[in-house]
Image (cartoon, rainbow, N blue to C red; front, side, top):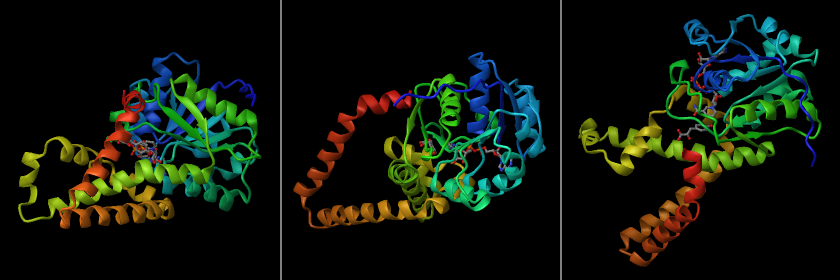
Length: 300
Ligand SMILES: NC(=O)C1=CN([C@@H]2O[C@H](COP(=O)(O)OP(=O)(O)OC[C@H]3O[C@@H](n4cnc5c(N)ncnc54)[C@H](O)[C@@H]3O)[C@@H](O)[C@H]2O)C=CC1
Ligand SMILES: O=C(O)C(=O)Cc1ccc(O)cc1
């Protein structure tokens, strides 16, 4: 499939200057991409800090003005804030001169919000999701190399303007990312398995152990595996509240399958069935070894 050439993009807008939004702005700046970047954040100090650090060129708090002054507008706020933002932007976006994209970790809820607000899926809407991030949040966590050699998934629909998709692709490629296209449903299913379920397990494990009688004493002995779980469990509660409520169905599906498998493992342990346990461990190790180069590349 040939890709459309992006129309000239001169001005970018970012709503939400936290980890993901400010990392994008700082990466564009560090790489010398010739774009004027306007931004806003409901937390006034975050926008001022992004300006002071030179990540953005101007703070523009009024959403209609911000939208009307940019070629591409990126929504980089928690997933459940997106319907209200789209509602506020709708009158300005109806002109169709601005490409709208987002970075939300769930895509079905973004599509539904667009349908609710616009009555149809607009040709200038290109939902997206950078598969890059960390347990840190806020403008202070911005990292200009965050997207380097990482993937960004875009979920355009059949009626999406190819030039709008090309513009968003171009943007992410400027900061070192490689762009993949996917359907919304496939995105939410894959991310439920590879990102949302692991976060749910980490939150639940750390919460459960922290509630036991020794309380926090066990954290003194956290090494290796448990330490890795605690890193994930340090992720932002607001962001993950929104992700799980927005992707509940796909997460429940994969959680149920995982719980079935966990029951099998539990039973094997209760019955001292070493053969079954070894089978589980060997297959898991084989999968990790097989994909280790790919996984290490992404971790860099
Ligand atoms: N943290 C991560 O590792 C990743 C997060 N994402 C997605 O990116 C989005 C942003 O996440 P982060 O940057 O990590 O969160 P963050 O908490 O670091 O930044 C979000 C920013 O949005 C601002 N904000 C919240 N509501 C707003 C509103 N109504 N209007 C204007 N600003 C508002 C907050 O003040 C904050 O500065 C989320 O949708 C998340 O699902 C995607 C990939 C990775
Ligand atoms: O820190 C980690 O382990 C992550 O997995 C970061 C992350 C969080 C949410 C996303 O939608 C994508 C990446």
